[in-house]
Length: 313
Image (tube, rainbow, N blue to C red; front, side):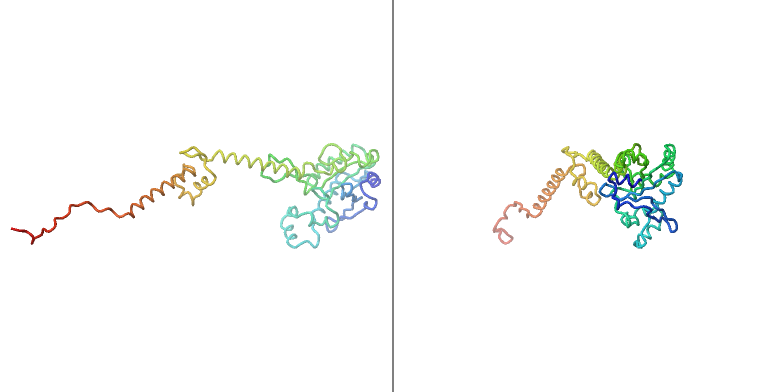
């Protein structure tokens, strides 16, 4: 009946709806999905559906959620040895392995959204109180499987976006709602969020990676402007002419290998150039003076024709 309601709403072709599909999260246990929906044309490339007809308690559903989460973190048997060694090195290493290299991508196409394969719980022939209790247990006990995380960023105060990449998107509804309003109506609630939405809207992540990229780009731009303003406020001013130092002159007086040749470090580049020009002119004057021979000193001519043998009596 759930499959029929999804098909009636255009979510999945009859040939794209499969039942009792096995997922093996471990070597012994097999988790079989009640229904697997493939409806790329409706914005749902893949959706695993579990239908509860009052036969399972909340803890059983939490266990199912955990198994799907574990299955989404497995590597295929022919994974590259380097990837296998990385995953074995520490428990969270799988989170650094792209989804394209994981086992679940061998079975299902990309979801078009962040996270693992989405999971839907459809409650049938039950009471509102039981649904509420089950959802509360899923939200509390299954939080580590469906909940997004905070992004690791240099701007934690500016980033409100959430990281859904390692989470299982979980939506819930009831068969009665599907039959009354249709599967295409706003009858789906995303675990961890308030209100009911359409299936595609419930699976989307408006506070996810797209928002993160926008917020981080804005935070980087603001940080760059702030650092530029701080740097400009610290820019030295020439003690002679009052002009601000250029970047080149500022670097020249602060870098050790150039500071020893920077001259008077309290003056700007043009004033330093004037000083160099004056020094070169003075040096040229000294050089020219040193290269010019001295002029002969003035002295009286000696008397001609007078000597020891020229005296007359």
